[in-house]
Each structure stands twice: as C-alpha cells, then as structure tokens.
Image (cartoon, rainbow, N blue to C red; front, side):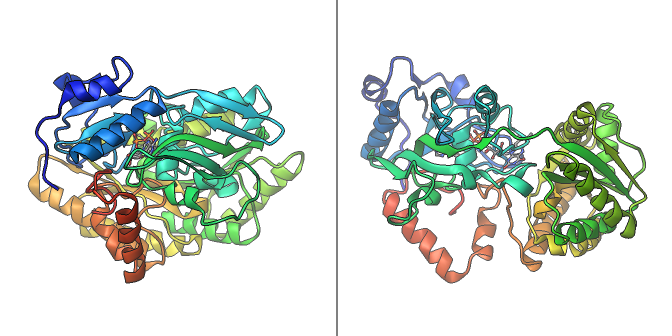
Amino acid sequence: MSITTEIPTRELEARLSPGALVMDRDVIDSYAYDKALFCPAGQALGLVRARTVDDVVAVMVFAAEHRIPVVTQGARTGLSGAANAIDGGLLLNVAAMDEIVAIDPVNQTCRVQPGVINQDLKTALAEHGLSYPPDPGSVAISTIGGNVATNAGGMCCVKYGVTKDYVRAMTVVLADGTVTKLGRQTAKGVAGLDLAALFVGSEGTLGTIVEVTLALKPALTQPITAVGIFPDTASAGRTVTEYMGSGANPSMLEFIDGPSVAMINAYGDFGLPDNVGALLLVQSDVKGAGAMEELEAFRRVAESNGGTEVFVSDDPADSEMLVAARRAVAPAMEKYAHTRGGGELVDDVCVPRSALGEFFERLAIIDARFDVEVATAGHAGDGNMHPSVVFDAGDEVQVGQAQEAFAAIMQLGLDLGGTITGEHGVGFLKREWLGRELDAGARLMHTQIKDALDPLGILNPGKMLG
Ligand SMILES: Cc1cc2nc3c(=O)[nH]c(=O)nc-3n(C[C@H](O)[C@H](O)[C@H](O)COP(=O)(O)OP(=O)(O)OC[C@H]3O[C@@H](n4cnc5c(N)ncnc54)[C@H](O)[C@@H]3O)c2cc1C
C-alpha cells in the first residue's frame, strides 16, 4: 500500500465529535507506543480520540476513501507492539468510550463500551454481587476492548478461564464503516458461525470493537493462600503437573523463580523468603473447609516433589500481600533491568502443564547458552510462562544474544506442543513466528479471512499477520 503523507484534516475533523481529532505532533507521538520494548513505531498522521460509535464509523469511512491505515488503541498496555503507530496511519484511540451501558443481574451479563477499565468494571459489578473474573496483571490500567482484542488472561484463569470465555456478543465497526452486531445476548446460541469469537484476539486487524456483552459470575469467595518453596524450578514444575493431575481446581497457581523473587525483594517488602530456587503461590476459593483441604493436598504434592516448605494462611491480608508480590514481578524486573542496561524482552509461551518439568529443565539450558539473564514468572496452572530476557540494550552483542534467547524460548514452547503466546498476543513482536506455529491450511485461512474483512489492508497492517 502506498503511504499517504498528509490528510485532508478539515474534511476528517468535520465528520468527528468536536475536539476528537488531534493533530499536535507531540500529542500524536505520545500515543505511538504500547508497553512492548524493542517494537518500532511509525509516524502517525493524526490521532482520533473517539467519543462515539459515529466517530469510529467516520474514521473507517475516511480511511477507506483515502487508503489510510488505522491502528485501534485502548489503553496501550499491550506487550507486543500491536497498538504501535504505523507510518502514514491514523491512531484511533477508543479509551474515552468508557461507559458501562447496562448491568443485568438476572441474566448475569453486562454491556460495556470498549474503553471501560477492567478494574472499574469489577468495582461496579461488586455492588450488584457480581464479578467479571479475567484479571490480567494490567487489570487496573487496561481496557475491556483491549482485553477482548488480545483475549487477555491473568491469574484466575486456571479456574475461571480467559476473556473469550466471557464474551457473549459485540458490536464492531468494519473496515468500510459498516456497524454490525456479532454473537448473542443469551447463554446459549448456535445460529451461524461464531463471528464474535473470530474478533476475540484479532488485535485490531479485522475491525474496531465498540461494545461488548460479557457473561458474569456471582461474586467470588475470598480465597486462602499457600506458598510452596522449592530448591529449583524443575521440582516446582513437577509439582504443578502432579497437583493439577490429581483433580485439584485452585483459583490461582502462580510460579516465580529464584531470580525473580530476588528482584521482588529488592523492589519492596512483600514478606517473600530470600535465596529460594522457586516459589508456587496457590489459592483456593472453595467455600468452607474445602479450601484448606485443597491447599493441604498441595502441601503433600509439593513435599513429595522436593518442596522444602509450604506455608498456608487463611488471613486475607496475607493473600492480598502475596498477590501484590506476584503483581510486583513486572515493575521489579523493569527496575532490575535498568541496572543492567535497560533491555528486557518479556516472553509469553504456553505449554501443556504436563510438560512444565521439562520446560524448566530446557529453559535452564537456554539461560546457560546465552550471555543474558533469564528470569521467569507465570501462570503455572495454565502452563503459561513469562521468561524475561534481561540484557544491556546498549551492547550490540548482548542485544543479539537476547534476541536469540527469546527465539529459543518460543521454539521451546513449540517443541513441547505449546504456543508462542498464551495471552500477550502476536502484534509486531512475534509476527514472524506466527507462521511457524500455524500449518499451511491455517495460514491460508488467516489470509483469506483478513482479505475478506479488510480488502484494502488498512486495519493495523503489519501486525499479527505480517
Ligand atoms: C504490567 C502489565 C501486566 C500485564 N499482564 C497481563 C496479563 O496478566 N495477561 C494478559 O493477557 N496481558 C497482560 N498484559 C498485557 C496487556 O495489558 C493486555 O494485552 C491488555 O489486554 C491490553 O489492553 P489495552 O487496553 O491496553 O489494549 P492496547 O494495548 O491499546 O491494544 C492491544 C491490541 O488490541 C487492539 N485493540 C484495542 N482496543 C480495541 C478495540 N476496541 N477494538 C479492536 N481492537 C482493539 C489494538 O489494536 C492492539 O492490537 C500486561 C501488561 C502490563 C503493562
């Protein structure tokens, strides 16, 4: 596609809500990146802060008329460069479309605009005795639209599933400005293809989501928490495999390796022990005595797999502190990376949890092979691991080593029957790897679907589908 270098600003402005079009270069550039490191951003021609569905329609029609790329953005917390600006494109930010349209306690659903922040929705639902479980680490800052467009996961997914499990219906604006409703409001429904599911995880490449209907759960029970301490990562991995294989159904099962624990302890006091090989954080939200039984079962499995200590607490304050410790991994690692030259590549492979022991053994070999540091945390119960490669971003040799280590980790994920991305998405960062994961038939279907829905190739070009 040829790149337009200027746009008829007045023409676009006239079609939008007053003030929605921003042409100030500094402001446009401040919206150019998401949170992924080492993903380039182009120079966008303009930024539209959409307030209404009509604004989104106007952008799409205008973009189609002028063959201008459109990058839809939520809160830009993505970790794959998927929301980054493209040269000559428009940034379509929908974060200001943030109304909770309806909460329906009888049908246990809600309708929300895409810019609603996940935590704000949770807070509003709590007043009705309802909950929306998906809880990415960015719960306080990311939008529901972004969560849907990346099929976001989180810590509670081991028991409660990921975003796609809650999406009933949505309204989308297609590449030519057509507004259409996909899915349905009811608990069941099988009429036609599941087109709403097609848009879940589509990373802004098929259309812009302007409203979502989400299924809800009754308010969740306050969990109790156990911490298992292990001499090494492999014994923690084997514990996860055996514990989940026993039929356990924890509401959280998270992994933190020794280097990450050290980074957290240097970042703040969350009560974690020093000098551990790895930690597992386990929660149970079963009502009554069942929760303690579930965690005592974890203790037995952990001890039989080499776990040195298991602490169980029914104090909600302890649970909150341990979850805060897990959430501190990202900022603690960022702080640590700054002391090592600032380079940090966060991976996101997901392997069958039966393969976690082997995953950690082979990850240690990758760590030793390259002249970089690898520190890992992740959603162990789902087999979704985030090994972070830390390196000196100013040292060309280290940058090369980091990229090779990052690629070796994705290959390890594929070798073990897993995926290159469990929840962060493909975006720019992993677009070359998508083709390795998909077989020829799936690659062709991806191309055909993209061509059918975006024949001009203006929706987030160069992301995900390359
Ligand atoms: C500290 C931290 C922790 C994180 N933890 C997790 C985690 O535990 N689990 C997890 O899954 N992710 C996690 N993330 C990644 C990120 O928060 C998620 O991918 C989130 O869903 C992105 O939402 P957003 O509103 O920021 O979307 P953006 O980053 O703005 O956009 C992400 C993608 O969605 C598209 N998009 C956004 N809105 C729309 C829309 N309305 N219609 C169509 N396409 C749209 C964009 O084009 C882009 O491709 C974390 C990020 C950070 C910074």
